[in-house]
Amino acid sequence: MTTPVARRVNPIKHIIIVCSGKGGVGKSSVSTQLALSLHASSPTAHIGLLDVDLTGPSLPRMLGLDGHGIHQSSDGWVPVYADAHGQGVPRLACMSIGFLLKNRGDSVVWRGPKKNAMIRQFLSDVRWGELDYLIIDTPPGTSDEHLSLLEHLAPVHSRLSAVIVTTPQAVALLDAMKCLSFTRAVNLPVLGIIENMSGYVCPCCGEVSNVFSTGGGEEMAKREGLPFLGRMPLDPELVTLLDAAEPPNEAGGGRERSSDKAFEVIEKYRKTTSAKLFAAIAHKVMDTIGPVQVAQEIMIGDTASAQGTS
Ligand SMILES: Nc1ncnc2c1ncn2[C@@H]1O[C@H](COP(=O)(O)OP(=O)(O)OP(=O)(O)O)[C@@H](O)[C@H]1O
Ligand code: SF4
Image 1 (cartoon, rainbow, N blue to C red):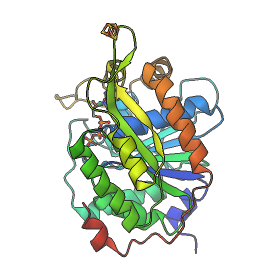
Image 2: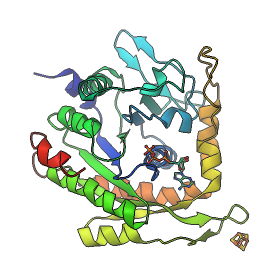
Image 3: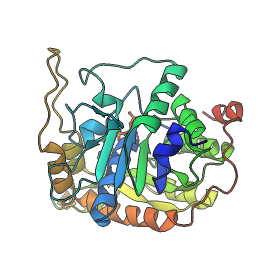
């Protein structure tokens, strides 16, 4: 029998779960950049971006989609399109709990079962259509959200894989190892490691300098026999672009639709140093993803050992 989740995700070619062991290492910005880079480098690709960081959704802000709400059609939730105001068919769809909150500053304090129900609803009710890539941004660590995703997706989708984001520092690498051990415990294939905040882009000349330690993510990839997808420096231009949203509406007023802002993010991102560097990562992902298959059955039943890694 085809389940509601299977019906929605079967037309999706590849699902990439972006995770990290530690918070604040740039998982959401990597998810956003992966979506923007695939959108730019593959002009016919349809891309979806799903935010399951339920307690700290940041994709609407990063994509310039703050203020948008969800439209309920007779066939389910219509995602918000970041390129809706461009020419041609929109191909960059986003869904986040942020679109369901009354005000951006509202918080979500839920226990596991409610989070699980929300994730199931995202997977079964969102009208993604035929996507080439669905990129899923997750909370840090290995939490209820990760287990829910795998519980719903693994039985019905065979082209499911993960990307691990870390910074070069030892403490982040230690947590990235825990994240890797989670993926191994549940047999989730890992496409590779991205080392974020590695070096610094000079705001004057765009030169990348290694002012802090670098290379930790690459060493980890080598040691663990995983592809190293690349390193992304700290880029002030990227922060200005992705963190440029207005502060939450404290007055509790209505949700203002932010017109062409998302399209502006897409256009401006293409000109950044980060975009040029991330294009190589996106190509590696596209090259690697072809042969990725789930070698063994993903083991959700073994949640005790999986959770024990977090
Ligand atoms: N390469 C980078 N250059 C400059 N700023 C960056 C870079 N990567 C991330 N940032 C900034 O660092 C902050 C944290 O990044 P982000 O929200 O992507 O991290 P996260 O790992 O998803 O965080 P959380 O643990 O809260 O989910 C954001 O303000 C983001 O814009
Ligand atoms: S990278 Fe170049 S422009 Fe930037 S601070 Fe150094 S010397 Fe100056």
